[in-house]
Structures are given as C-alpha cells and as structure tokens.
Amino acid sequence: LGLCYETLYLFDPLTGEYIPWLAENGAWIADNIYELQLREGITWQDGETFDANDVVFTFELGQMEAVYYNPLWDWLASVEATDDYTVQFTFDEPLYQEWGNLLYSMAMLPQHLWESRSEEQVALGANENPVGTGPYVYGTHAQDRMVWQKNPNWWATDLLGLDVAPTRIVDIVNSSN
Image (cartoon, rainbow, N blue to C red; front, side, top):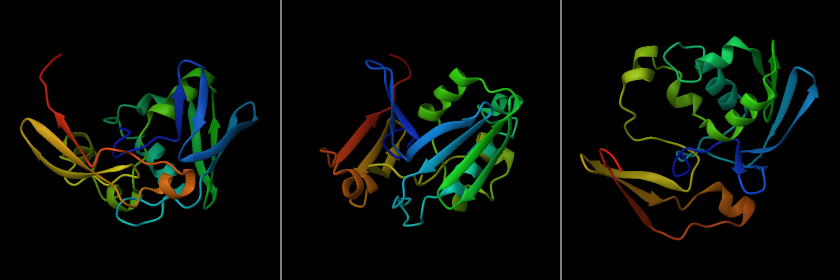
C-alpha cells in the first residue's frame, strides 16, 4: 500500500486532514450520500485509465465474504459511477468515522485485471505481477524480499509535480519485529 497500490485519500494524523490523492475531492451531498470526484489523468501501471468503474469495482468486491472490508456492506447500500470520474455512495446507515477510515486505507484495484477472479482466487490466490497506480512497480521477489522499481510513468509526477528518490526499494520479509 503506497508503493504499488494507492488510496483515494491520504491522511495526515498530525493535522487530522484528508489529502486528496486518487480522488480530487469528495463531499456528503445528503445525510446518506457521499459523492467522490476522481482526479483525471491517472493510469494504472499497465497504461489503462483509472476511472470511476475501478472504484465501483473495488468497493463491490467487498460483497465477497472473504474480503476484509465485507462488513462495509452492512451499512453501504450501493455504489454507482455517475460518469467517468464521479462515484456516488448511498448508505443505509452512514457511519461517518468508519467511512473516513476507508477513504485513506483501502487500496483501489484495477477492474480489468481483477474482475475475472473468483472469491477463492481473491482470498487465497497469489497476486503475481501486481499492477497499481503507485510510484513503484513490482520488480522481483524471493522468499526473503520484494523488490520494487521506480515507476517512470507515475501519474503524480505530471499532475502534482512529485517524484520519489529511490530507484529501487528492497522490502525485506520478516517473520516478526
């Protein structure tokens, strides 16, 4: 999360502020309806466009019991793309704090690569060659490490003027701290 896969918002715990990331903005337009406007110009690492359908797909994936955010569907009634970059969430019971937590902690997934996966594949399958929107792409792995390489086409370089410094990140796998 953050290297390959990204979230709709970032959260700054020092200021308590949500920082628009894949989303450009969002607001409660009614007591039980949240509308999200996505940032245009974002692509997945394979070149496909990131859009409202990916967000709808990611949230609807939670209807599978094996997905960790399945309890969201106890209080979310529906999610709908109203255009290519706008998503509306309608809640049976809007749990505002829980919703805020999901906005900055839930990784968006590419519909075009995940939609054919069964619930068993989602829950237990290996995510070989992950494709996200983030600043690093999968390089290689071994039993004790994952190697991530800088994504030369990261959307935030053009749209936000950001860059990441390391060319590679070697994430050592530890069994504990």
